[in-house]
Image (cartoon, rainbow, N blue to C red; front, side, top):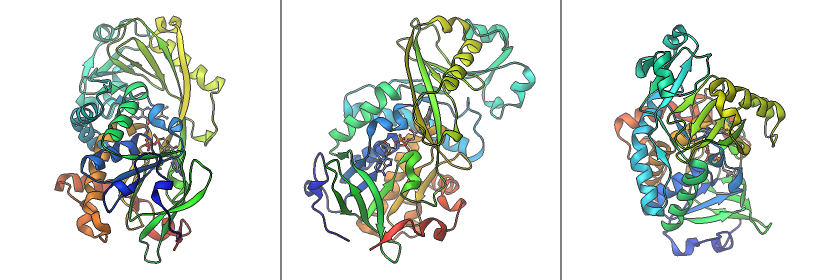
Length: 409
Ligand SMILES: Cc1cc2nc3c(=O)[nH]c(=O)nc-3n(C[C@H](O)[C@H](O)[C@H](O)COP(=O)(O)OP(=O)(O)OC[C@H]3O[C@@H](n4cnc5c(N)ncnc54)[C@H](O)[C@@H]3O)c2cc1C
């Protein structure tokens, strides 16, 4: 393994100023930033290696906080509820550290249905308030004629990730002393013959390829995570979005319709999402078909909104897994942690993910071998039991993932 002066890599504060056992965060999207911030709050020396901030799904998402409205089930519902409960405290920390608002709104989310039979079959029906057509109209004035009833999930909400949360998180990280290497692509993980992490090989913003030693890192590269651990079952699920400027408070609730949802921000901006295009791979750009799908869904949900002025159109990549649940906790490589595969719930799950990963990685301080104790770190017994549902080894054997994925030093 080649040696490296770390201040050649860091665009901000170098490790020379920090603690003795720094942590590398691989990927500077929503999850990477959230973990970096929590680690820094615990007094860790942290460096974020980020290829391109603008490609992060954290800037793409609609920001729904919707474990109930999305009809999550089983361990995913429990994880979503756990994160939803943690969100106000998590946002409070970011706002206090950054001095910036995050745009958290406990707006409630309405799910409309054509028939009451459809409503009763919804996985989380028992956790919502049933609405008849008149009540639905009172909650969503102007809702399309195709919907006869609904469910109100008053406990769900939204956050303005695109315009506020990401910026506030970046600022909070800087204020807490996190070092950033923007424009830096991690090319490879370096481990020894015992599968212990020794560092990463990267290409910096200056175009130079180098190695950077480390004993602890977290893989938070979103939809691109499998490029560093090729056996990891994470694939891109492209989503297109658009926004319109509506009158302020025209819509108070988020409306989570079939195939399309509408998220009203406080200033009247209406975010319309989203296509789901697994077949697109990493194909960039908007498509006429995707945009038409959003426009048709918008017209069916809220006909009058079809005449509101258009604002923006954009797209991005969700990190999908076969069971649509994230990969959290240890990896097949000792010292490398996983925080990826958050699919369509990464904004919702950022709070619990960063809380858990900071606790787990902190428990491995000093490069300690990863034993059973540090698999659950400083987590409560209930959290450790829940975390076990999201370990990577529910999919593959260590050999399948580790083989050929890292260079041995
Ligand atoms: C259209 C759409 C709508 C969504 N709506 C919602 C929603 O309403 N609610 C919700 O909870 N979630 C939503 N999501 C999901 C959420 O956005 C994601 O789950 C979440 O942003 C994933 O965060 P991440 O940090 O893992 O990935 P990202 O935010 O994508 O960040 C990954 C980062 O890693 C960097 N990177 C990749 N490879 C490398 C490398 N080799 N070296 C260095 N850096 C690298 C990339 O440049 C990128 O900046 C939505 C997603 C999409 C696309």
